[in-house]
Length: 213
Image 1 (spheres, rainbow, N blue to C red):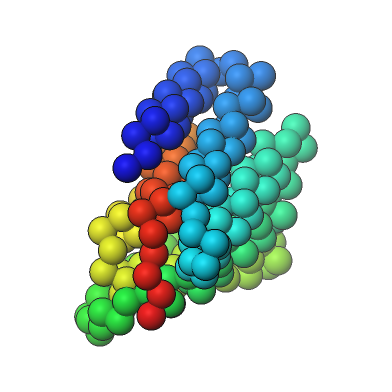
Image 2 (cartoon, rainbow, N blue to C red):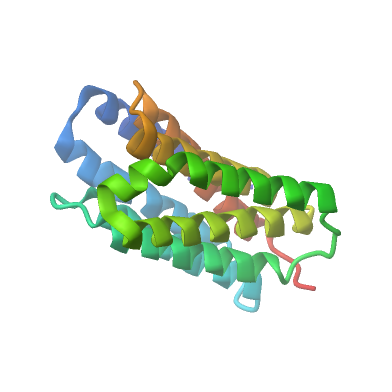
């Protein structure tokens, strides 16, 4: 177990959440990408050169870092950031598809689809208000791919990957509600804590080695 990596990542995450709570902009610009950089470095340190799934997760982590940067620029690039995270989830889907063969219960798949469609309906008015039809299509595609990612994570049967996927899904759900429905106190703290947890668990799975089917 990469305990030293996890310790440093935890400290960096807590430092970011602290500066976020206090509104220190400079610290945010350093610690947000810095924490993701540490998570990526942990994945690289534990990567087996022949591990296809591990490489795909690593690429997904790098796409996520690009998305983070887009969302934190002085002039936010939301669509570009959404696109980067869309690519990240495609990488995670491709990685998870090579792992395990646990069948996904039809009831669970139906439930995930219903949750995704239902949440899209809740977000619809706010999304259209902010960015019109283009943003509505982009958000709809993103909800579809992250739902697919969660379903594929469940199929792997890996507790690390499943927990990471659930944390990522919840993080984005909080972000979307806060942005498109109704802002609420501490939303960014909650979503970023879930986000760092999700990415760290995915990187930790890479460190542990992933067996391809």
